[in-house]
Length: 437
Image (cartoon, rainbow, N blue to C red; front, side, top):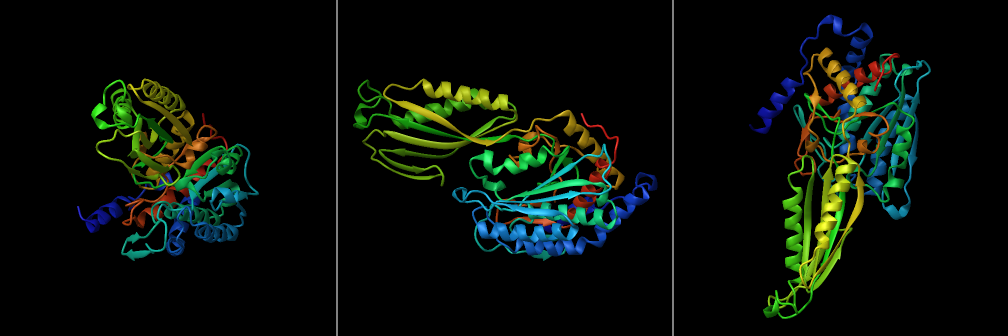
């Protein structure tokens, strides 16, 4: 299916059926209407945000993008602040906005809204370009589109007179695509916001039929192998041993044989560098190597990632990997180290209940029913840091294509759908007497 035909199909899916009159109250119908009223402004905001280059390491660009969204929150009456990170972390920081509605009722759910300001794409280019119902540009889908859906939903709630009944914290991080280390600092404010909330709604890319209550975590590993450098004619003998390359190959193959069939567990050796003269930069994930075919390589470096659903699965996989590394071939030694990363997000009863409410919201608006997206179809994300604290739902953002590539784009009807569903969900969550497990 070509892009035009696909866009037409997606737009059709995102055009709501006529919902039965009894499914929406008068206030809810007014809320929905306000999304339409502010839609063109939202598309303009998305265009302006996309036209600011904001790769994670473009500190000035991320801050400028944050300033655009901060102005929108300020106009809505939010109390906003910019959180700087230590200069050594080389990250821009985070935007935080808080709203304490004067008519918030006891028993209503305090809501945390999560977005991020940075993009994978670094450098100038990939500016906003619209053709009918499709727009392209860096961040249109991941996730300036999601940020814009947040703003559009909040504007609709304000215009419908419903925002005063809510308590909301908005956190838009500046380094989701490459989180600053240590994570205890770069995610401190996000976690603090979760501790003041009851529900977290995250606006990574979504679609008409699914949302996320479980997603895998991700961490890193570094394998370093040493061998004995000597003439290649002696390889496999006691004096020379097997060399670093064969040992690295053995280790990686045993990882595959022992661990590759576990549900939700994956591990990927992203780079491998080996020879007799090896240099490697773990931060840049880049290295060089030199050697000769008649010399046994004495060093190999492999850097990879590990993805998992639960902390227990991560710990078990790490233990197995350490055991494999420890049983070295003759004449070799190896070590493996692990880097902290994003935690897993296993499903919880609270998340299932929020998903049920979201499904009802979608159908009441005339959109499709919602089911949980399989965890393996989501990478790591900021919501995972708070999912153990509050009931959390992700995938509330826009529907697009080509994320993390020069072909990134968004189906603009999904911006309206995302804002309608988010606004109505937030309104219903704020009502008293709603129990979450």
